[in-house]
Image (cartoon, rainbow, N blue to C red):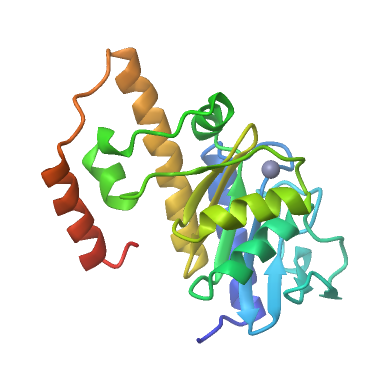
Length: 217
Ligand SMILES: [Zn+2]
């Protein structure tokens, strides 16, 4: 696997942080972003900073066990969640955790978004968006619960908390986070209008075929 340099990874996370904040997917000092920059090296956002205010020197370098190698600040309180994703999926090099309002509303209500409501959602999430069970933020239990969901999904909701997306680059994880929130928001509008007729199985299979073809799974 080819890894980004720490400098390039930081640049991509600074850009992603701004976009998360501008789109209202995080507020205050919520959310965290990480990028794998070596076989046993993760560069991640520090705790207690707005994702709109990240700078080149903000980031914390750790190993895959969470030991700090370099960095002026403490790592994110959700670093365990990120490490669980890297431990489970060797194919991913970026993780984003955010609190997108509509997606979090679904997660808090215990309702998985109906991804067959739109073609786009069915294409991006053919196996749905699972909800990892509630557990204290920042804890190992939360990370373990999410890890189970990471086995077959790059987008996972956290009950009463938020969402996590994985990607083979920071921009891919960001695009997926935007798509999760878009799917949730669109479904809320659809529900307000009385609901949508679900896509039939044959059509969903065609969309899954397209997902495979485009390497989205
Ligand atoms: Zn959180």
